[in-house]
Structures are given as structure tokens and as C-alpha cells.
Length: 346
Image (cartoon, rainbow, N blue to C red; front, top):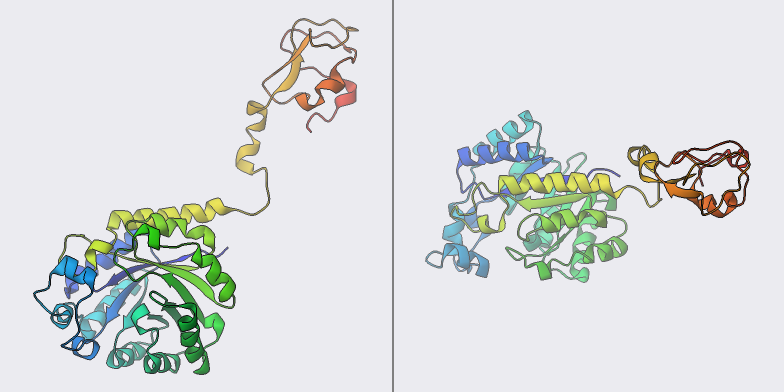
């Protein structure tokens, strides 16, 4: 099984601060992710002056400013993004960004970005989907989040992408819930199994907005290939997404948990593993002498018993041994041997 691609969603949690963004990249690298992801936008092209805040945004940032005013402070200038991109690559991380307007699509295309994450809010933005799908970039891969969407709406978006040149193997569909944070009762991991049946031609991943790292680790056995998680250095920082993000410590536990579960899944076959094989002698039992036995005596429940170690005749042959003749003397606790039981394991 290929390893799951783990993405630390820095998003706009840098709060427009270049130095904070750079530090977040370094911390994400330490945690063990494969990539960091940003959000690239010009607030005026993304949000109208009449757009209200989301309920979760009001809860963490108040209602004194508009969504537009809040978002202006979260912009990352293009030139600073280029510096951060180079830094991430230098330390061995993949880096990409979600564009939220056409200017930002053009900018990221100029960077020859390979991975294009389409957020849930843009899933039904037909001209946006067309523009990204038509970008003349070699080895382009599209990742789409599906929060708030029905299966029919997801299919509509896929149809647009494929009409404009994308193949199913170039698209990853992310199970997602667009609530920050997502209550555990709304995470609905079982729907990933449904995704794998309904959208069998595509890779399936998980965009996790639930608290902590539990759901992310629990998603691994569902066969996901991609996971992203919002990341912050401090949940108490000002800004809309920090409270629903994981800290560096939690991100590290998420990465460790995912990698451990990947190893633990194994195969569908029940195997005796190399690590446990050496314990068979120690943990299993053999037929041994219960007391001193003289040559020619018959083995019976009075003179044989079962004890560790397990390198003698298996107790599974108990009734076959009963009634056999001792071929030589045995002292108490000595392993019973007999010519008819050369192969001692079951």
C-alpha cells in the first residue's frame, strides 16, 4: 500500500505574517508531513463588501468587522509566497496553495504548480473549475473537497473537470465537512466507503476539520490516499481558523498515528509473523513427564502433563500419546518424546 500523503494546511493561519508562515513550515516539517498548503487570494476579488461572516467566524473573531475586513488581514503577498515556496522546497517539503480568485490562479500557474486543491466553497464554481482544468501544466493533479455537497453536485464538478481535459486518475476526491471544528457526530467516516464505491475511478482522501487528530488516524483503514489538516502554532492566535486547527504536537501525533496504522493494517491473511515466531517455544506448552517414568511404562494422565516450553510434542496430540509405551526413562518435567511423533508441531 502506498503511504498516505499528509498535508499541513497552513491556509491563512499565518495571519499575513511572513515570519510566522516560515516558522510554520519548519514546524510542519518536524511533525512529519509530506506537504504544506497555503491559501492565495486577493480579498477584494474573493469577497463582496456585503458578505456576512460564517457562524464559526463570528464565534472566534466577533462581529465588529465584515468578512472582507477580516480577510484583508490574512492576505499573503505573491512575492512573499514565492519566498516561502522556495524555503519549503529547500527543506524537503512539497508546497502548493489553493487559489480563491482568477488572478491567484494565474499567479500559481506561473509557478508551475502541480497540485491544485479546489476548496468546498468553489466546488460549483463552473468558470473557476474550467480555468484550473484547462491550465497547460504537465503532471497536474486536482484535489477537490466536498464539504456541503451532495453526490449529484460532486458529479457535476467532476463532469466539468473531465470535459475540460482531466482524467479520473488525475483527480482525488476528499471527504469533508465544512464546519470548523466539525462535531465528531458529523464527521461520518463511513461515507468514505460509499465514496470508494460511487467514485471508484478516483482516489479518495479526507479533509479533516474535527478537533484533534483522532478522526484523521481513524480514517486510515478506509483506504484514503490523501489527508489534510489545518495547522496552527497557537489556537489562541487571532483569526478564524486557529481554534479548529492542530498544534505542532498534535500534528506530530497525527503523522505518527497515520504511519503506525499504515504498518499495522498488514494483509487480509492470518500470518505467523517473524516477530512472534520466536515466542512460540516460550509461550506454548509441550507434553512433559508429571513424575519419573520408567522405560516400558504406559503414558497416562497419572504420569504426563502439559507445561512450557513448547518445543516438545504439542498437547494437541494428547490423546494420541496416552497409551503409548515409554521408549526410555523420563525424569520429572522432561519433554516426552516418542518415535511416532517426529513432527511435533500441529
